[in-house]
Amino acid sequence: MSFTLAIVGRPNVGKSTLFNRLVGKKLALVDDQPGVTRDLREGAARLGDLRFTVLDTAGLEDVTDDSLQGRMRRLTERAVDMADICLFLIDARAGVTATDRVFADILRKRADHVLLAANKSEGFAGEAGALEAYSLGLGEPLRLSAEHGEGMPELYEMLRPLA
Ligand code: GDP
Ligand code: MG
Image 1 (spheres, rainbow, N blue to C red):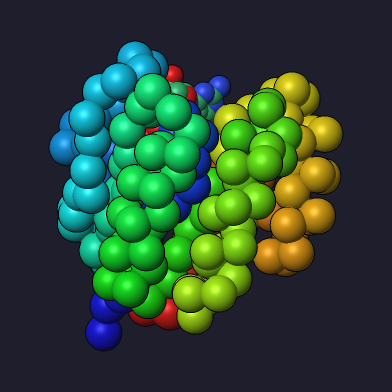
Image 2: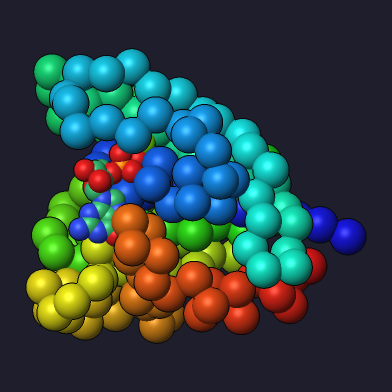
């Protein structure tokens, strides 16, 4: 048996970086540039001996917050409905933002199973942000660094019961 994991969260928290790490190929577009059109991507992930499907939700960093939120909401809802489990990323360095709270609300209402992760947690710069993440009411945040590969054994332990 396998499962589908959707990586969700606002733009720039590191979703595509994590997707690429799990899939092992540069399938998802990682981009710092605002205004790049992005979409929903699916890949075959491996993590230790786990094999699963992973979805990368992506959005448009558009001209207005309203259009960003509308587009991200639709994409996130599509991904949530396709997924068995959602991995909700926040940026530990940025802390919890108003947009993170919008996503947390979508997930609380719509997703059956949510794992919370504070990405960009390498070093000490993310400590305050990771603590703030408790306030989202989605449980204990997993401290991840998608870029540096930290927290992957802990992610494995959280996903293993689902496989
Ligand atoms: P997405 O918009 O959520 O898909 O985010 P991306 O994966 O495109 O990453 C956005 C930016 O954050 C890029 O500059 C990444 O290199 C950077 N980033 C991703 N993961 C980490 C991490 O673990 N630590 C740090 N410091 N930066 C990261
Ligand atoms: Mg992305």
